[in-house]
Length: 120
Image 1: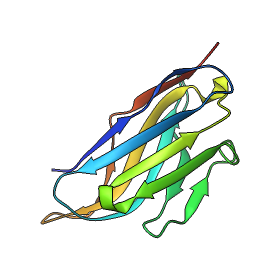
Image 2 (image 1 turned 60 degrees about the horizontal axis):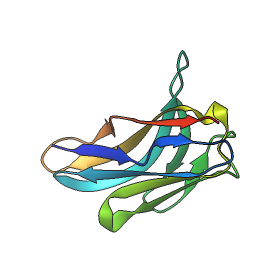
Image 3 (image 1 turned 120 degrees about the horizontal axis):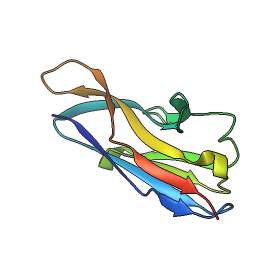
């Protein structure tokens, strides 16, 4: 069984920083792309940033220049460094990973979500 566990959310003032982490565990053969999504109240879930197994990155326009996604393949972990946070960044942030476990088919996995609140 594969699990994604996020950490690092919380309350931060505008202009502040947070670092989210997401660790994948279980019977994992290969992790392909990993990413972060967010969902604000009454809004659809949207992609924030993604990173391939080779390190190529992709960002939403709202994240460019402020957020940095990275991964540690040895630890099966993806990070999201968020700087210059704005109130509109407030949302539940979800980790996503494209994973091929041992013995079962490749699939899309999601973490449970971590709340990020940007407020003074």
